Length: 255
Image 1 (spheres, rainbow, N blue to C red):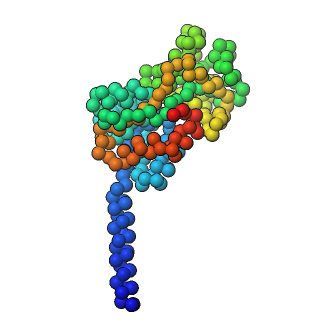
Image 2 (tube, one colour; image 1 turned 135 degrees about the vertical axis):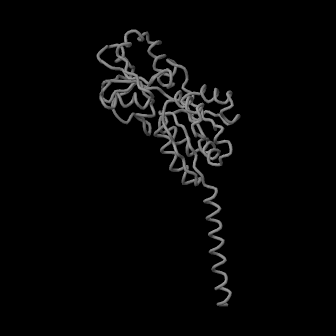
Image 3 (cartoon, one colour; image 1 turned 180 degrees about the horizontal axis):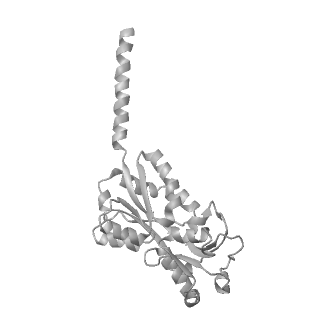
């Protein structure tokens, strides 16, 4: 009886080690290019993704247009979370992405925001009152939220009136920083940057009606460098699941 037990223990340990090593071998990193507006949600999602799948998400943040250029120039990204639907579609058409992997992971909302309490009214009339010196927006040529901002100004017939007031950031994060630091009294930002658990978390804001700009439909796609990556496929599947959806909604996005 004692002899049998002595032989049984190392067999179990060996089995456990084999299982552990198999799991470790399956775990991998996924390199993700993430539109700047989605920084906070993907950081919140990443921890659960790693815990639930064993894979590690390594993200870079920036403007969608800039990422397009980097991907075309051979950047090592495996998955692209864009701020629009046209750029991933273009990459797919240009054979830079895995066909059939593209899907909409979020629909963004634009907000006019000031770090000052009470500065922005609920209808956005502050734009017409001319009581500000600087209006921050993201680069409309590289960032879909910046393009949406210019469409809003055009719809409100304020393009000319605000021309000398605009401070342009390279991406939506920089536009947010201009307002956050007080270098601009107000600016157009992604609602996700100032919104948490059903409310604006600081300052004052006007949530821009969707009818004032083209839909900010945000698509994700697996890039060619991720076509054989289990971690890339796992991330795409995870973003379509209920846990990620709950996080995405909590930051003010629609699905």
